[in-house]
Amino acid sequence: MGKQALQRLWWVPFGKVPEVEASELNEALRSDSPPQILDVRTRREYKNGHIEGSIHVPITELRSRVDQLPFDRRKRVVTICLTAHRSIPALRVLKAHGFEDVLQLAGGMVDWRRKRLPTRSE
Image 1 (cartoon, rainbow, N blue to C red):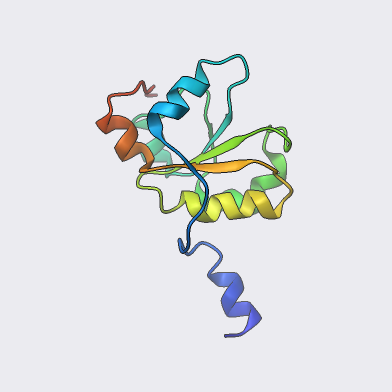
Image 2: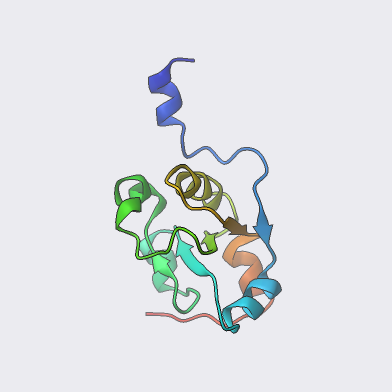
C-alpha cells in the first residue's frame, strides 16, 4: 500500500489503545486535577448530550485543528466518541502531535449513558 493510501486511512479504528472506564472517568472529572476531554463526534451528536467541560472537534476536522486545542500536552486527555471507534484514531492523532497521556473512553458515550452518568445538552 502506498504512502498516499495510508494517509487516507489515518482514521481507521484498528488495534488496541489505552482506555478508561466510564465510572472511573466520572470520578476523575470530580477530582482536583480532572483530565481534559476531547469529544470527536458529529455536531449533532455533541449537541444531543456531552460530558460537561469537553472540547468538541469532529474527527473529520481534528488533524487540521489539533494545534489549536486548548490542552496541556503533558496532562491526561480522554478521547470520546459514540461507540469507541472514532476515538481510536483521535487518540493516535494526539499522540502523534506530542500529547503524552491519552486514553479513550471505553464503550464511548453509549456506555456513559447506559450507566446514567451526567451529560449536558445544548
